[in-house]
Length: 254
Image (tube, rainbow, N blue to C red; front, side):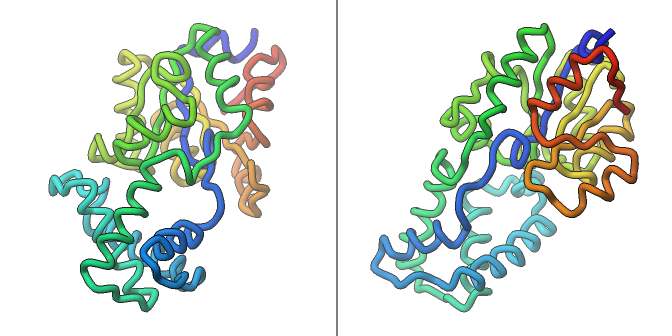
């Protein structure tokens, strides 16, 4: 008997598993600056500034400000302004508004993302097999409402339900977000679900901790993958390999 016959649901991480960022953050910050007649900010400084600003915002106002009811655009405006300041660019208010507007609209579109070629076929295969397909992502509402549909991943044809941290107020690696997914799938048992992601800490460990099965994808040949395997995780190169594993009569997974 293949693994897929014992499952009722497959859940997947989104970024790094189904879609990926295109280019560098600096590309989009540069385009935004140029659109208002400013020179390109330094890529490295902007990248480092963003990492610090995003980490701070996520710590002070997790889940994109869910608990404090911070509007999404305000959360991102604070984060982007802090990114520029930490990179050494303290624009005046009028200039920053123009730059931010461009950045916010860009990242609220499909432009900075690319869909892995195996994502849509895998999701459609899973649903054709009669499985529920759920998405679990540390992302805000624009993933669900704008970005995924713009990339051709639509609720009802590629996926059935989503659990997005900015809409739930809980984020990975908290196992609670996986429990929400089980409820959304109709209160099914965790052993009837396999979760597929690209992070040992955010995907594999919390999913396994509540009794779900889990697989990890190593799409980008990360050095960490060797450690994942040593820890007992099943690590695969892509969703084609995941489908083969799930349909094989000889395979087993944790």
